[in-house]
Amino acid sequence: MSFSASNGMNHIIQAQQFTPEFIKKIFDLANHLEMNHETPLKGKIMATLFYEPSTRTRFSFESAMLRLGGQVITTENAREFSSAAKGETLEDSIRVVSNYADVIVMRHFEEGAAERASRVASVPVINAGDGKGQHPTQALLDLYTINRELGGIDGITIAMAGDLKYGRTIRSLSYLLGKYKNVKIIFVSPEALRVGTDIKEYLKRHNTTYHETEKLEEVLPSLDVLYQTRIQKERFSDPAEYEKLKGCYQLTPALADRLPKHAIIMHPLPRVDEISPLVDASPKALYFKQTYYGLLVRMALLKFVLTPSSFRDEE
Ligand code: NCD
Image 1 (spheres, helix red, strand yellow):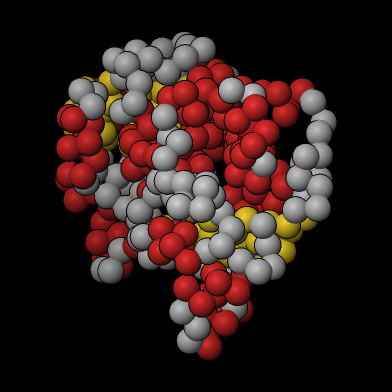
Image 2 (cartoon, rainbow, N blue to C red; image 1 turned 120 degrees about the horizontal axis):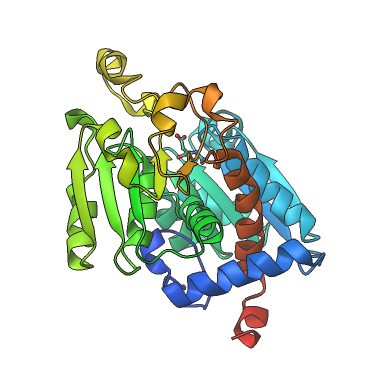
């Protein structure tokens, strides 16, 4: 685990920071916490500071903290209801909240905001999404879902479909997948929403096979995982452009049937129209279970961040 600050604090900022060994420990801990009721975070306080809308990420962190015996202070609309509305800088807000909480879980509309926060925080910062940058805890729960449902990560073929330009979940997940063996990634998007060159270069450096296509239907029979994403309406500067692209990939039951029997369908949620509700009844539809797995992974991450010495003892 890199990204620990000079004082030994562990911030969670970007998916590249995790090693496969660390990920395995987090997964083992998530499995353990599922089966054992423990309250190791009694007396600890988590602040959730969200400058962008969220339901599941904020609730799942809060639920994870409460389940481990900790407590929560929260602002669900920091852009309007925190001192940011009065003109306070992010840095000042973080310095102040550092005095009130033992960990800060932060979502922000600007790429790089979590990293900036981590530089001034005196407690660990967890990035819960920074603009079109990254969403590392979502990527960990996505990977946990794949590992648990398919029994491993090496050798999988995964298609990520939808908004690959603005979607931070696919960016973080690509960074994680680049750390495993013989993974094949198929990026499915319209020309205008292709995945960034930074991701492609990273995958090349890590010898991860990928290719790009606009045609979802053709790739379905070859997949182990279909990862659908929402077109990120709020990140388009031109509403007309969004109108042109919305609804470009809609997974219907007929299309889902083209996936192999063992394949799983994932989505970070919220969905708009990219997966028909008629697909929900399919045993391949994993997106709601994915949110349950997210709770387990976030419990493990909070335990790690707040009691790092106990984590080291388990090594
Ligand atoms: C995602 C996000 O915020 O990036 N949602 C989530 O955290 N599960 C995906 C999205 O908003 O489309």
